[in-house]
Image (cartoon, rainbow, N blue to C red):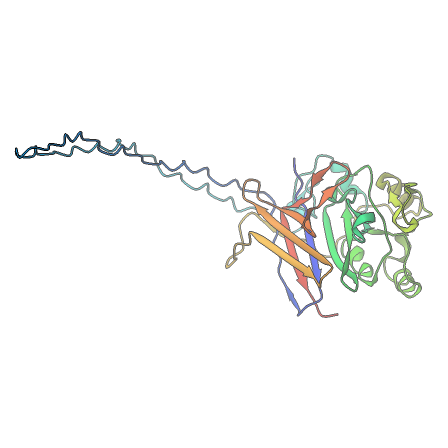
Length: 318
């Protein structure tokens, strides 16, 4: 079963917010194929004459069109109004971050992990490991026109996540929103001071903790840090911080599309001139496929292109 992955794209533009959430995908009705009509042209035999006798009268008898069989119009499948808006709506086996029923409900009893994942430069950072199994992924500007991910892992446990890079000030807020622990390679001293002095200060995991390891690749050292999330949850337990999350607000999910919405079959986000991100909608499976700088975004764990059921663009002045 494909997971409903939320992908948040954060931009430094004029303030605004667009969001949508779906708990279950409603399949589109299959329409009967159109019938192509082909009619054979009339082919009367004309016998020319070169005498002064009257020319024979030619009667055109066109080939009749084939008889059409009426095909009933497919009735649209009615949408079931499913609304998830509070703790009582999710029960014990529905993921509050995606609205989906999970295969392993016991995973919902652990604390979410917010892990910093690199995106630049492409030759060292891509393809990333583990993004397709995150419940939420935030892509944000790091500095200049390059981007980085803060991926929230909760319901699934991928075998490998990385490359893991340093945090930014936005990571003072994102983990707190989901009562998550923050896993990072480090941070600028000023940023680190702000992070450790915040509400998440007791649940920050750095590269010396259990779960982190170096790949040993012959690339710049800062791009070699990866994480085994199972080990990171062990580290959180060692800090006595592994417990079910306490959400101060609950995400709302609905199976009905928002009123007044506009179809978006292709989304293009240009972070200045260096990073170009595209999301292309696939009607067959109701998901958006991600492309970066003209190449499909692939998860190195399974060699599959990353897709998301929901893509949310956030813009803010900063």
